[in-house]
Length: 506
Image (cartoon, rainbow, N blue to C red; front, side, top):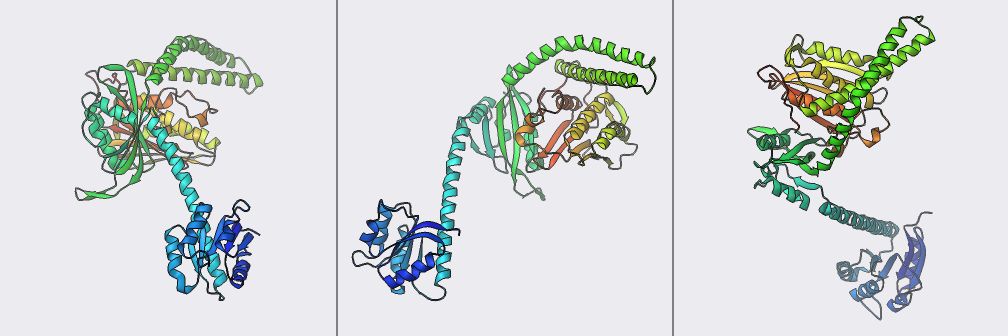
């Protein structure tokens, strides 16, 4: 039998009433200790440990609320239920005001047992809620202390962008930004590089960032090349409002500021190390690939030796592709990765990119589909090789991190004078803190550590798109998959030679 309470102290002067109450309590209380007076109840101190007290309020030695006061002083944390006859119900109400949990009128009819059960259930549920509340308060206090002492800046904004909370680290960052306004985008002044573009970008997110999604950008201060900060904006709630005659749904947001200066220093060290090894590795790998091709011409087709040569060649080519990725990242960082935008057929490029991943998707039983919105024959200006690299990296990740029998959808459309290409997968999705880091060089999520990769793909994606004057938006929710959306303007910002060279690293 499951008992609601283990030990109940029943204080009741009328033995016949005590018998009725004891019988009713015995169904869901393990032990019932009966005393006929307040002094008799107090004499139990140290002998029993009640987790509930059920008491009358009229005794020869003490009356009314004094009974509750005395019992509460002896057992301050034990809930009390008051038993009362109808003429003395005011005493019961007074007892509730000083700490009793409930009261029961001693009407010993057929409903008494049910009334008693309901009272005990109310008390039990109240105690459970109070325990949960205390635990939550303790957890919140620990969290508050952790946030206040964190070196990462944290702020919370309302749906209008007003800062309603910020820790000391965020306030230090805000002071460095030099802005004076109360809204998030107003904290940026001319002390911040590209501060006007940053203000506009942050403000736009309040109309477009869906709940559960995260957006991030890199911030540097003018005249300070040694320090860098990552700003992450996560939408937590939506609040519909009417603006300019239309209903908009801006989001309340959490803002994280991380000092990524040390990350940048480590990245520079990694780049320097890679730059001294990738060139040396590529030549012998190319020789292996060429030798495998030549040897393939002199062995019998379909033989075991031919199969081994194919595997050798394939492995060498994979290694060369990885080195090319490293070299691309290096050239991007140095601003020497030259892109030459030209007019291209959008559908043709998309179909080619999707076709390259169809065998892998088929092998993994992943549905890979391409959806275009009246784009047949549509031309757009972009660097074809760079754009294929972007699509290839996004599709590679989507297929790689989508479970078997999942789906990957590539959707393209023209909207607002820009080309939108979205790659959506049905994978595990990412938490906001993971989204904020994925575009950094060599970044790999801990849970993907056993999956091969360089951690450079999304870095290359971001910088090629940025070079075209475009943006990469990420919408991801844990358990709901991820969408990467590329937005390219109709005319990229080329130089006089029609090239894109100077890349942005915001």
